[in-house]
Image 1 (cartoon, rainbow, N blue to C red):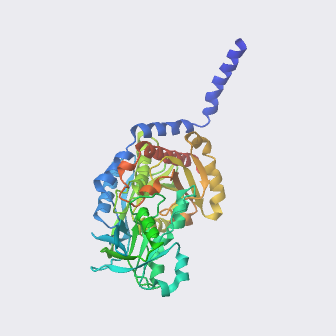
Image 2 (cartoon, helix red, strand yellow):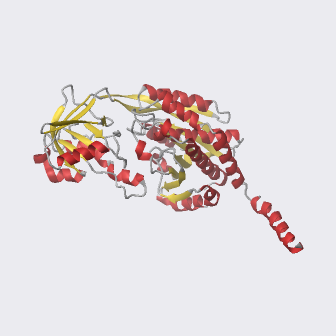
Image 3 (cartoon, helix red, strand yellow):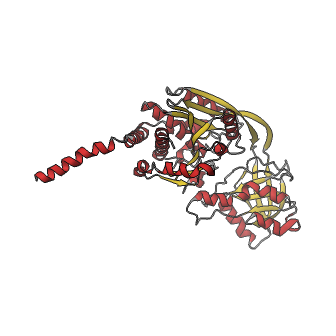
Length: 459
């Protein structure tokens, strides 16, 4: 019995000694405790998504979001400086008419559709043409102008459901949405319909950006829901189909908008910057809750949590809410240009732009000359993150932070569970009601923990 008690005593006395070598585990626990119990990120997101709503760059709602987020972060007691950084953004307005009808024999059906971002309109009379179904951009070259001239091209390649990561499936399918109108126009097509880029079979059309090549005549492009895409494809198996399309968006002159930036100056290494951010703009048809209001409030919560825990960073921390990720990247480009002009160095930049779902980990990338040592250093933090089921892997970053790669710091993308992300992405369903508050707060805690580890230990 005495021997057993001696063993227990030796284990108890050894534990504090081992832990005292690094208090990081204790501090990360406090990050999670505070964020899950008292986090504010869901309140900010509810305001962005429900009170302000869709925030397409250049719109009145986007400017309301700039002013709101600026006021919130200006009120953080630990912030040394809050600024609005100008950037040039495109201005596109959807208009109030989006009509797609298909006709075959004596039958007619109206499809649920949304104009794709930056598309031109059809004019008041609309356009009408035979529908030609294709499953990829390469098929256009095979068919050529002889088949496609004066037709309406229907791009119907679905996201691959076999892909474990939905982001990979999205990347494989989205080219038809982005480039379909330009490629079809080269062969004389009148317009395009695009299957919504989602794995879900539903009645919600998904908007998103499309881009015209400089050497083509722009033609109207609209997305239709996956259910309607399946229906149209089935009809085409046995019938010739004509489509009637009418929409009236406007492409206007570019305007000035703003990135919103809050900064806490580092106490020991002020010239090493750790950025955390998301994009403040969203598409206009929903509330931009997952894409990307969640990323913005994740970043804001990092600063609020550090304020509550009285944490003083060694390195300079910046929360950057970028403008215009969705249809131009004006904010990310302006930020990098300004940063490079001032010879700044971002040791790490973390972007959250994958929704407010359960966190899974982080993916990272960097300039090839520094990537391997940075990845090794970051993976050294896994012992602190593993209790929270978080991984660190190669491959990641983000659209707004990628222009910083030339500074040779580490670019990190936050990776939540993406299984449901494209159920809401770019639709009217991307609202606060479809965000789980606990999952949102878990994401904020995960990002705050990684910022803390990089700040404490460097790379």
